[in-house]
Length: 160
Image 1 (tube, rainbow, N blue to C red):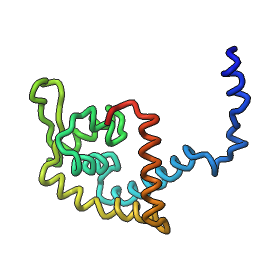
Image 2: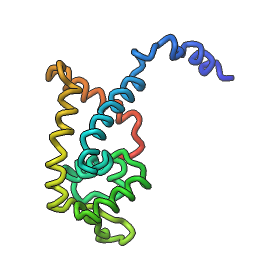
Image 3: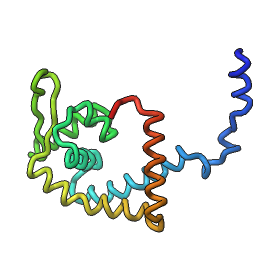
């Protein structure tokens, strides 16, 4: 075994040494799990799913994106996104169009009804966001977002 690899392995802390409350991926999963559960509760009463609202949210900001890019932005697996888009399209909330240069590439657009539906869903999303950042001042929030953006650059596999 390479000497450098061996030395690095000896320096690696165990999860027990770090502790769950100091292990950022664990904390991020807990936070997002709670956030998504809150949204599931709110949207379930209106027969809407979190993937549906997440899709509407992304399209409210970046309308006309390809299905592949939409999967990246929404952090939804392609198969789930396909079913989500089918349901949203049947309800008249989105429309899919073939790309200008390649008919196999589909772009997704928010309809006026879809925008109105997202506007109805937004308050619950915003309330959950506000609760998550209660007691965190603007400087802390800005610093946190900069850190998250750096982390995303470190691990991302897509250019978006």
